[in-house]
Image (cartoon, rainbow, N blue to C red; front, top):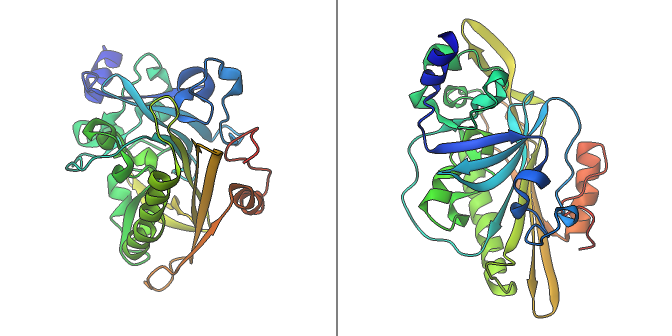
Length: 300
C-alpha cells in the first residue's frame, strides 16, 4: 500500500518521461555523433565520467526520447546534455519545471516518468538529495541567479521538444547577465553557423553537446530542516560544440565561456572563446583533470 501511495504521489500518469540508464548507446544513441548509423558500436558519445555520482539520463517526453544528459548528483548540475539540430520553431515556453524521481527513488526503476515538481508531494521532494529543485534557485548569494539551459529551447524542433528542456537535470546556475550573454554571444551565433555551414537532413542532423565545469562556489539549499551549504554548484565555465556534414565532409566548431565566481553580489564576468573541437578538448582535459573527448573516437 505504501508503494502504491508513493507511485500516485509521483503522478505516474504524467506524459513527461525520462530514464536513468546504464548506457546511452543502448537506449538513446540518436543524440550522439554517428548515432544515426545502424551499429551502436560506432556511436561517438562524449566521455562518460566514472563514479557513482554520475548518472546517464535519456530524457523522454510524451513517449519519445528528446535528448540525453550526463548528470552529477553531488554537484546537482549536469555535466553535459547532448542533442541534435535539424530545424527550430518559435513557441511559448513550458511554465512547469520537472525533476527526475529515479535519481532519488531507486526502487522506482519500473517507472521511467520524469515528473513535474509542482505535481509532486512537497514532503517527498524535500527528501531529494541528488538533484536540484526549483526552490534551490531562489536564494540571493551571488546576484540574481537564474536557471541556465544546456539544451536551449531555441534549438528545439517543436513545442514538445522545447517543453522537454525545462527539466532541472538540464539546468545549471548562471547570473541573469551571463545567461543573456551566453544566448547572444554563443547560442545565436552557433545556430547561425550551423544553418550556414551544415547540410542538414533528418538522417544526418547537426550533433551538439553543451556542458559545464563545476567550480568552488555553491548555492546553499535546504532539505527539510537541514541547510546544505554545498547545495547546487555554480560552474566556472560553460562550453558547447557541434559537428555536422556538408558537401566538403565534416564541419565542427566549439565555444567556451569563463565565468568568475559570484562574490559580493557582483555581476558575473563573461569571457567567450571560439575554437576547434580539438582545442576545446585540450582545455576540458585541464579543467576536468582527465582526458575528455566531446565526439569520442572521432577526428574532428
